[in-house]
Image 1 (cartoon, helix red, strand yellow):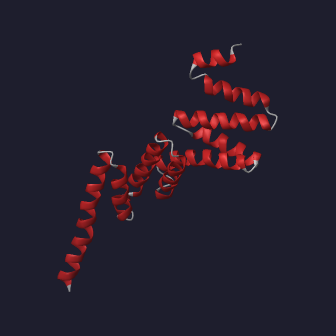
Image 2: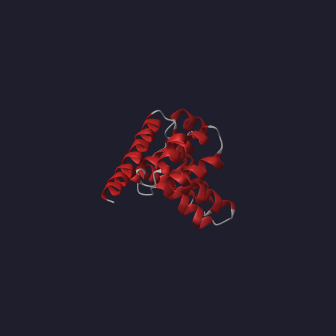
Length: 171
């Protein structure tokens, strides 16, 4: 019986450990889809959730590059669900807040849209997301009659590209 317990203990550690190593190699090679599946199968072995979140976040970015917002959103949600407190889970949540803002705006829930866009813009580390969220925030601020806030947000978006700003909003 002791031998069986030892064999089971060894197998239950070494097999996941081999899979964990494989998943990390796939992640390093930027094979995010395969790595995400491997990390997902590990069910949290050696805190693999953080790496799983990283994979799904990068898959989401890949879908954004392909202009597939729906699949990007699904993968940002998976990143957040894998490990909400990790760096990638938090950044994924910035994207999710942007999408929540868009949805709230479509449903004419102006206060909700305002809060989601502001939260996304304030927490975004991705420059494209920060600009999109700031533009959404400006739109909602305008609708709410907060014209100075809308203008400041627009200036913030274009300040990163002075030529575009001067061409569009020369003062």
